[in-house]
Image (cartoon, rainbow, N blue to C red; front, side):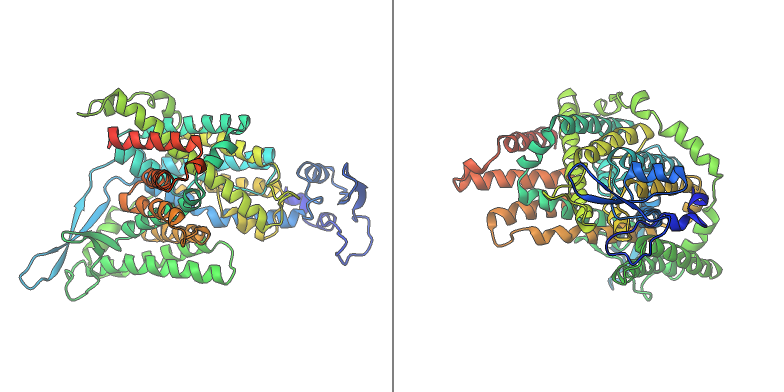
Length: 552
């Protein structure tokens, strides 16, 4: 395709608008009347294939051109490709080190005790890497061809944490069981979108809770990032604390290996902020790559010094063949939702678990998945479209229902591939900011993910110190919504606060939503504002209460 755009064809791709300072030429667009009676500039191309692409995606009608769409598509990919490494790392961690501070001498000198947490979802890094890439390709291509919007999709941050830490580790369901919940969520989302029930459910969630959800998720994933980086650690007295960076008190043979990863994570977050402030595209990706290079360089120095952590790192490191990831994906992920997903025997074998508790977990978890995905997608679509002045005269996102349908289908397809909920990425706004206006940009983004799918061994070079920085920074970005909360109104502030605070404090996204909705209902009831309560909100609140009383 690039060959068709290079050379003489580049002149043919640039549409002429009223403000363009362009002389008449054979490539100048013809002006034709649309059904509404408005004149719209259309470009005539000598290349018939380019003409068909322009007509299908409406590139020139949107005031864009192929060059801007390609740049926008690549920019979006650069801004969100970190999800391949972060998602794979989150799912495949099998023996994370939980660093605990303990006083071991009378003088109170602190030592670091690393304890291994025994959990394993049964999937490898390469398997989830492929599943994440494939789901991103499917979701983004749906956006390109069905909704024809410059929006990209992939496994959503926050929702993947909910999948791993709440559903699998929290409830005891297996990886395949959790995929069933995601698959069902996608099907429910399809029904809600097609029937119009999505709008009713959206209106039933209190605004204070709805606005606060992204912020709560942001704090939650930032907390996970701080833990993965070893910055926040367990403490025997205060439960959590800052890792000791005192070089005089840390064991001499491992102090370097403890401090360097922390330094790199903090430096990477600062780099992301600086690059973003300067308007550099792909700030997250470039900072991750820079942090990875710095990490291996500094840890290499530690290896030369015989630092224990550094020696273990290099001695245990190996890179797999690119084909290994595909083999692992075939064995561990694809189709697991059908082959093993409906087998809940492992959950039911645990004392205290029964069919009733399983039913409530499935209902409440699927509800949480659906609500978070729906509100996150709707907010992203509106925000990104508004940034590119793409909203229609009524302030609506063009092809909104089709975009939501793409999200729903991609979620179910992602579950079949073996990954968590697929959602529209807010990073799409970076591509729109670079000039993308149509679905052709999404085609370019999908193509980039296709290439990246074969580079999984290179992704193994990205350390958790770098991906943890992405988690922290994305958490920062998701806090933007708190400015919309009416903090001076207690009836609004308390539900919003519960929603935001309970997610990281309880290590559970659904608990935050539950506390927000329940507190909202109780405040309205006690202040005599029963008429303000939507009946569907009562049903949702009752389901959450049942979850707490019967499953927790």
